[in-house]
Image (cartoon, rainbow, N blue to C red; front, side, top):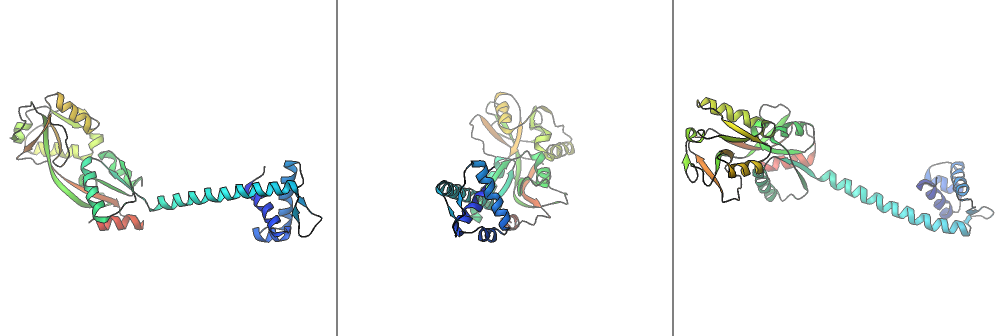
Length: 286
């Protein structure tokens, strides 16, 4: 097989006019250079070098081989350089996991403040945010603080907070009103599945029990879009962060005046992360 290494050896012999000099250039013996050139000639079935003259020169077939080899080597240099540039660029890029549109809004504020442009974002389920961060799938993650609380491997900073509000369709009895927890929990609830929403599910259930109420969940779903669709076409009540953007006039936000359901959105990274760009972004986001 005619490899790139063999092509380079041949070109160095022709350029230097010497097998010995080509060996020095490549830090190998003259014997190794001679052997590699012989293997090229054997595979092609043609002699490429006029060994009767000093300095050695390529014969007519060798001249063609020399020109074509130079093209291949030059193209490989371009290829190698492009790959290196891509890898260098990737090493400077931050990968940030987020769990909702609310997270993206907060990330947008941070990006504007820091004027940082080299990032990639990946959607992750709330329930998987902490675990995937610990598995180093992301440099940073934005999600509910409840996912990171009491985890010794994770450091987090709060970047936003608010309340969960109830959402109903425009024909629901609670539409366009303020309501109490008792009034809200009179109706069937729809929630994201526990594996999707993570610890927030159990936290909401605990807060509800503390009020002497029951989390009457009649349907669970995998994403917010499905949840909103089912709210729109059923008599369900759902909960979303008060800052969550809803662009559907058939969905109404209901302020729950005595709600215990509150949230904190945090930016998190691993405590033992020694990546300079990640640490710098994290500190400046505070």
